Amino acid sequence: MKKLYLLLAFILFFLGGFVTGTLFSTKNNMLNSITIGQNPQSSKELEQKTPPMPEPSTTKMLIGYIQDFRDPSVANYHQLTHVIFSFAHPTKDGNVLLNGDTALDHLRTMVSKAHQNSTKAILAIGGWFHINGGESYAYFKAAIASPAARTKLVNELMKLTETENLDGIDIDFEHPRSQEDAVNLHAFIQELSAKLHPQGKELSVAVHSKIHSVTGTELGFIMYEPTMFQYVDHVNIMAYDGQWDGGYHAANLSPYPFTEKIVNYWTTLFDTHNLSKEKLVLGVPFYAQPEDPKSKQVSYDALIKNNPDNAGKDSVNLNGTTYYYNGEETIQRKTKLALDNGFGGIMMWEVGLDAKGEHSLTAAISAEMKKIK
Image: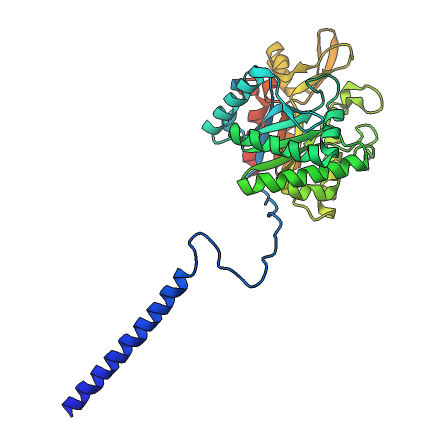
């Protein structure tokens, strides 16, 4: 009987080894049939997928523009989530221009300082004025109207993103004034999104407030395709410069009731089209508008240097004229308004106009954000 048991054990051991070896050999052959780094061949043709749309950020954003002629050291990078260099200028055939070597040096310094503070460095293209003179509108319109120029502009921006170590691009087309403009801007942003997002880069768009500062009604002569906003990470709303509506009235620069109507408009628009309101970023001004149109704008910094008590006001008499602006309290009320409505953060035009020290508006916004969190 003992011999019989040993014989049975030997047979089972032999069969187990044979089966194990066969399975190992089969698995090995399967692995060897797949090239490392490639997907196995399929009898079905793979479906081409659209690049994934950007997910809204969970961190409240504090975004500051900085102009190309300004010393980049003025920005409080440690308080900003994003800093946007303005501007690069489009040409009608799709090239990109910067304002000489000084602008390029400032861009590189901004990127370096931003990254030292874990702040994202973005390049804005467009703006109101063009480097070659006049409004930027005609140049931008032509650059995105032609498919060839549009693609060239996308490729040029991608080159700048790579060579200058940028974290993204901001589009500031001021402003699409026809349905054709709106369609072309949509196509441009969709094409740029398809290049930027797979590289882990961001895409934002600066937009007009779309609200008349006097009547509070929608401005119909500026047009956007709402579906365009699905392709961007942030929508920077220029909720200021209302002084031009219905004739020149400096007091309409950016008062709180005007901003309430802007917030309501964009909230409704995004809800209607099932878009995330966390993409919305409310813009606030860091400058003062003179009642006398012959006078120049002055910075918030200049107002504080004249008298620190001006931080608690929204208008002041200076150099024989009244200036209208947003003081600390109004800026903080706007911050709360935006975040209470589900917006993703605050944008500032522009950080080089801010005061230093205890009356900094950037610091005031940052402090309000921390309270709301």
